[in-house]
Amino acid sequence: MSAPSANPLRWVLLALTVGASGCGPVQSTAYLIDTETMLGAAQTAQADKLAPYEWTAANLYMAKAKEEVGYSDFEQAVDYAKKAVDFATRARDTALKVGKRNEATSSEPPVPAP
Amino acid sequence: MTNRFVWVTLAFTALSSCHSGPQIRASGEIIKTDIERARRSNAMRCAPRELASAEANLDFSLGELEQGNSQRAYEHVVEAEAMAKKAVALSRDCAPKQVVVREQPQLVVKIEETDKDGDGVLDKDDQCPSLPGPVENKGCPLEAPKDRDGDGILDANDRCIDQPEDFDNFQDEDGCPEPDNDNDGILDTADKCPNEAGPMQNFGCPIVDKDGDGLNDDVDKCPNEPEDKDGFQDDDGCPDLDNDGDTVPDDRDDCPNDPGPPDNKGCPRKYSLVAVTKDRIEIKKQIKFATGSHKIIGKESEQILDEVAMALKDNAQIKKVRIEGHTDSVGNDASNLKLSQRRADSVMAAILKRGVDPARMEAVGFGETKPIASNSTAAGKAENRRTEFNIVEQ
Image (cartoon, rainbow over all chains, first blue to last red):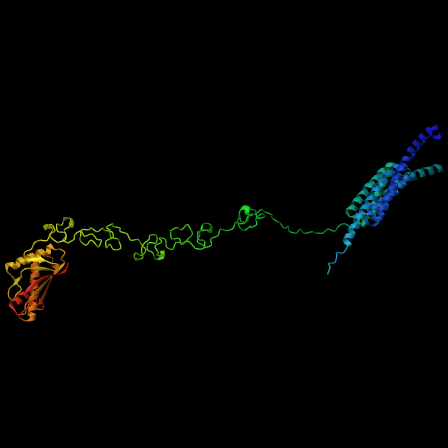
């Protein structure tokens, strides 16, 4: 029980190391997870068909974010990930709107009772 | 020397493969132009993936350029350029076709606040927009006042709403007809005096005594001249200012009921030989003629003629007197008739000479046709030979 408190400097150094070296990847990873989640939601809404512009942009930005993570350029990766989330959100919203509009136009008028 | 050449060649190749930032930026501007053109061509609909890829890669290239990675920037520019051109190509026929839309003539709906009936209530609030009416009745006319008998007097003021007023200038305001204004029992249509009560015999007019002589006009021959009531013909209602008609007014006539000359104060003159009666001027003695002649003889005959002429002058009321000549039966009838005519003419001429108007006289010979006594005796024959002055008009 006395080991951590016996060497408190070790914990401080660990925290500083993690804070200094892990801030960018954690943040970028979090955004990338958000992006994938939003893209999954958009795909459920058939954004790949109903909102191809936003869907394509979201995927490109997510890929670019991942690429930047590979280059350890986390700041750029976060920027791209944010844009990817934004496009994925728009893709989902647009897909839902278009889907509703298509449903409304394709629905047949009710046949009056004889 | 060879190694040196190799190093120079490698350096040149390396430099030539590098892409300068301005060059990439310039390419980016061109791509941006293409992207805008593609957007205008509706690439969002016809080439959404290509458009998104072009824009993203352009963004990536600028990002890489900022990071100093010109190579990766170049790669993205190339990709962006390709995608932009593809987007332009795919959206070439995607732009909305120009459709000439002819403007339909606009239907101008003029909304005006009108008041057709001019009653001060706007038509939109007027329940009777064509009929004027007060605001309190929502623009509708109040119920028209009734006049059931149509006499022009409204029922509210008409005491006889079912009987039209007769408008005869008698109580015309009450709305009731007055068939007998004066209530004399004679309908106005037959009443000569509809507003004055009067008996039927006077045609509905009141019997009055206009001249105030005590005789009502219906029996007054002179309703406008009062009777003088002097005991002479007082019942006719006419004044008799010269009762005896002797031209002397009664008020200056000492004998108002007996005719007399003015120089005798209206009193009859006293004649010795004649007497004026109702129907004749009697002569107390006969006028004498020569035998078988018409010549008047004797002083006494002249006196008789004088008095007859005087009597005629004194009695102006005698309008005409007939001078008659009569004979006895001696001789033939025809000669007697002629003789009597000549003698009557002779008397008339004698009186004419005494200033009597000839228009007041006529001479007629009757011969022996009108005896007044027997012709069988001398006395009778003497009576039959005579001259008479009969009043025929007065």
